[in-house]
Amino acid sequence: MKDAFQTGDSVIDLNSVLERWSSQARKGYLEMLLLARLKAGRAYGYEIVSALKLAPGFEHLAEGTVYPVLTRMKKDALVTAEWVAEDTGPPRKYYTITPTGTLALDSMRTTWNRMTDILDAQEPGR
Amino acid sequence: MSPATLSLETQDAQKRWQAFCRDLQFRDRNLPKEDAADTLAEITAHVHDALAHAEGASELDRLNACLTAFGPIPAAPPTWRKPLAVMLHYLAIMVIGVTGLFLITLLHMGVMDIFNPDGVGLWVYANGEFSLSYEIQADAEEVAGVWFLPAILGVTAAISGLLFVLYRIAIAPQGRIAQWTRE
Image (cartoon, rainbow over all chains, first blue to last red; front, side, top):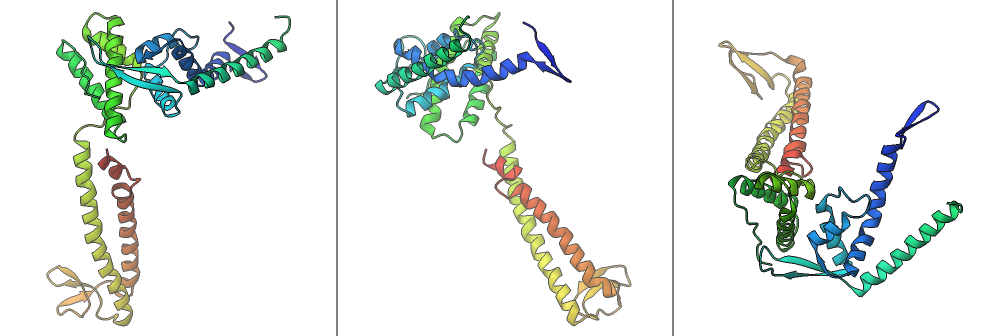
């Protein structure tokens, strides 16, 4: 992809524009992706982070940023957390989605689908 | 939640982990103790899991890779900074208190100079010593004359300005040194 475009007197750096957009978009997707992972079953921090890193734009995610979001989601009653002792290694904190979290995910998914529909409608031939 | 520990074999890796934990405790210093312990335990479990998948020639390399992937944490200040800041904080209080009393005396002399211009002033003795006095001094000459009052006001304003700067830095809650005392 071309990295820079000349518009009049200024050169637009496309990569920096996309990076800015991607950074904002990631913040918006994060809770939805976390809820989606937890809907598939309860999981602990590292497991959740590993799943999240498979999503586009999240490959280089700073892993520590997920925990404050999980804590906030717990406060919002979207998830619950429970410590489980392990045979080897330190205990792990498992997160489970709540019915409220499932409702929130469904609503987010609806919004996401509507957004996709709108995007598709802009380019019918695509 | 009982305190979680990370099992590391090499001393280098243990030191690195302790330094990371110290930074983490600094970052979470304003959290309730239970929440901070909970966070530490969760991150310990995370790093334990990440270490099992990390690549590196040594345990330290693998730990560094895990901590880099975890993301930046604000570094804790050096251990000497808080005691030094506390000392400077109280020293500043003392300096402002003592100098403040001196300023009040200077201002009082300025006011009294209006009523007794011949007696109040800066007196220089024959042997070179000098004093600020409210009364005429024998064997001494009053050197400031009519400029005594403006000089007193100028000196008072200048010292007040310096004390205010010292207050902003070392005593005011938003000042750098006062902030260091709360670390």
